Image (cartoon, rainbow, N blue to C red; front, side):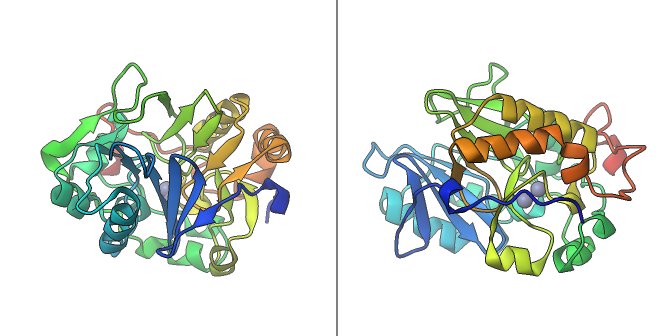
Length: 294
Ligand SMILES: [Zn+2]
Ligand SMILES: [Zn+2]
C-alpha cells in the first residue's frame, strides 16, 4: 500500500450535529453522511429559504435527504438547484427521484452530462488497485447512467454556480471526465467532490472508522491519474482553509493545508495505485464525452 497521510483531531472542522444526523460546519454549509458518501446542503437555515443540494447520495437516500432538508430549511422546501460534482453511482443515487420530486434544475460540467442523461456509462472499476473489500466489490457497482432529462443543464461557462453567489466551479477531472470542485474565495472554502477525499474509501474498515486522512480520489473508479494529479495540484494551490469532500469529514487549518501540499507534491507515490492498468493508456472521454464508454 502507498504511504498514508494521516490527519489528526486538530485538522477536523468544528461541527454541530442535529438529531437527524446533519452536521453543520459553517453557518451556511452542512453535510449528511449516507453510509459511504456525503451530500452537502448550502444555504443558511434562517435565510430566505434559498439553498442548493450538492450531490444526491445513494438510491436509498431520497427520504433521508428530504427529511434533513425540511428540518434545516422548512417544511415542503425545495432547493434552487442540485449541483453535481460528478456522476458516479454513489453521488447520483437519488438524483432522478429528487429532481422529479422538487422539479428543479440539475447542474453539471458539460463533459459529465452524457452520464446524467442516459447516454454513457463510466469505464469499469479497477478493483485490484484499491485493496480491500470495497475495491473488490466495485465491479458490482452500477455504472449505467441515470437520466434526469430536460432538467439537466451545463454549468455556466463564466464559472458561476447557480444558487450559490460568491462561489466558482473548477474543472477538476481525473476521477471523472467532468468532475468539478466548488470554491469560495472569501473564506477559502472548498467543496472537493472526489478529487480529494479525507478518509480511506477502499476498505470496509476505513469506511466504518472514517479516520481522517488526506487522499487522492478513490482508486477503484479513477481512470485518468495524470489529470487527477493536475487537479490536486490546482486545489492545493488555492490554499484552502476548509475542505469538505464526497467522503470523510470536513477538515481545516494550516496542518491540513500542508498535508494537501504533500499529497500534491508526492502524488505519484501516495495516491496513484501501483500496478494500475490505466497508467499507460488513461481512459479519456471521446469528443462528445461519451464515445469510449459506450
Ligand atoms: Zn466518484
Ligand atoms: Zn464518491
